Amino acid sequence: MGIAAIQATLPVEKSGVGKSRPAGKTRTLILLPGGGGGAYGRMSHHMTHFPSDPFAKMPRPVIRRLIDAVPTAVLPMAAGIGLSALVAPQPDAAMSLLRGLAVTLLLTLPSLAVGTALGTLAGSWAAVAPRSAGGLAGRLLAGAGALLPGFLLAALAALAVRVGASAAPLGWTALSVPAACQAARLALPAMERALGSGPEGGAVRMARGLGLDERTVLRHHALPQAVAPVMGGLRAAVLAAMVGSVALESLLDLPGAGALMIDAARVGSAAGAVPALVALGGLTALLNALGLGVRDWIDPANHSSTPYQGA
Amino acid sequence: MAEFDQPPLSQPEPQPTGFARGLSGAAVLAALALAAAAAPLMADGSALHRLDADPVAAALLDGRGSLSFALLAAVLGGALGIGWALLAGLAGTLVGKGAERRIVIAAQRMAGWPLALLVPLAGGLLGQVWLLALVTALTAAPAVAALAHAELSVLMRAEFLTAARAAALPEREVLRRHLIPNLMRPLLAAGTLALPRVLAAESFASLLGLGLPPTLGSWGASVGLAARLGDPVAFAPPALLLALALWAACAIADGVAAGVRKP
Image (tube, rainbow over all chains, first blue to last red; front, side, top):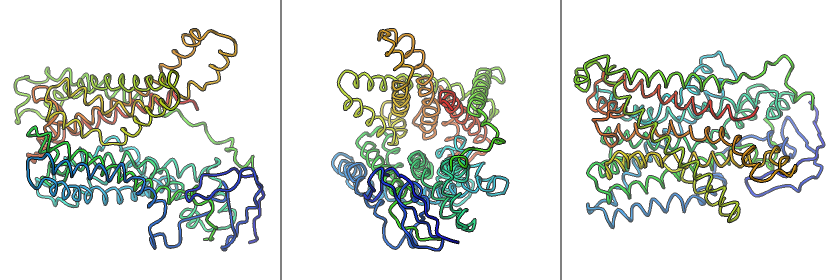
């Protein structure tokens, strides 16, 4: 396999790490199937993939998104806890709210992570092998999103717990299913576009043309294109998980921030309910920022200045 | 490369699935509404709220409260959201693009907050149904406003408007003959987005016992009660009907949006 050298006039691209190339300049795109070489621009960014050890250090886009989220996420949480300490009737209300936020985070974050990962894989597989069992599961998840709201699944989990099932796995499952549905709904068309004959399928066609094996093509060139829209659309999944978590906490009497808010609302105590609501808004913003940070990290468009490392 | 990017001629044209989906959603929702309206004929109305009553008939009766409240709140929420978007457009014309951008960004940011949590809070703290409807409508309004403003922005940049102005058509005529007729469908599409949101928000609040009063009936309240009592027979009918109604409302919103979008 030789070196593929393509000359093209490439536009400036938004770079996730603040590096961009001048507009309208002719660049030589050098693609080395075995590794090495440099590549910039619209064609080259598809030819990159995840870092070899992505978890060795926290990626810069995630850190930047978390820093950006301080005013919208951390401040509401701090304000909610402070407000709770000032106006709530119970003396230890602030500590209860802090513990409640930790419980809510413990319920929502793993559910979102697992649900989104499984939904993305199932949705992507539905585009690769639509008639396989995984593909059918992906299509089922993608089509069932509206049928399975988080609070209804939380009620189903509460019913199962009442008749003797274990609370923790059911609760996490109930909260992860809406996230999986949302992820599959977004990943399926994105993967179809990445594997299709349109302009977004150029990276996969080029990788196949370079002789990379199908598993490498799917993993390094198609899957990142399916994951990026999922992480961008995580906001709906976060909202569903938050609402489901509040329902679950309240129905199962878990000591989460949502249960604190609902208990206070039941007795008509605005001083107990409003701080919890403000803090839950901050937690939602934090989860959204985390999702956007992961999106920025994974999105192939943000790796345009990353040297192509081969498969 | 150009010919490589072209889809093969044998590839069939994409089918307009959005319209069919919206039509099936409308049919399902109409069937649910008719069944809920006819529910009192199925059994003695006084027996329906007893726990030993027929759960299907009781669930259908509950659908009257859920669907009518959702319709009311959706109309309110859609109107509020569309008004918000029009206000942003007006602010852009009268004050400047900065004001328009600030109003729209506020809607977008609010749409990212868990506004559905406001509904049980309002149910617990305010208690009255009309206030609950207003708060439920407010939870849907920012998303409607963001979508309506996006559709409005696309329409304002349309070529036929530029052509009409270039042909020296008076601004009033442009508004009457081109803008308003073409504005209806996108705004309707944005407004229908409120229906699944308010139905879900009301059901969530009722599930926690902080939504509609028991006299009105609600699928969410029945689901919550059955979940607390651990009664699967009482749980299944309202849960299935609620899931079906949510799917239908989402399908209608998707279908109307797909009908507005050009291929």
